[in-house]
Image (cartoon, rainbow, N blue to C red; front, side, top):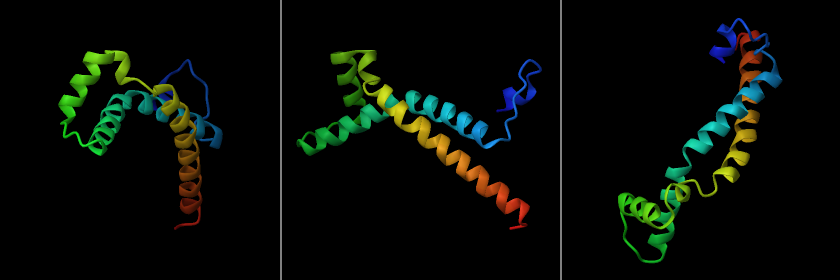
Length: 107
């Protein structure tokens, strides 16, 4: 948002509801993609514990790396991104709308 506000070549009103939703969706999508490796590790830890295996996060990460490589850490990244991008977009637009309403009402 700061980049858009300070860039002289971009003329975009970031105060609108649609802008908040779009910027939230972009941020949420990027965050979902970037954090997929930790989600893969956590999910694998949980499923291996249910199978009676007592593995550390480092052991799980090593196993994923050895069996699937870097691609294994991003398994499901498209699904996570498609889930979280609109969810964060909706959240941010609702939050900003309620915040603006509260400010105008002196709450």
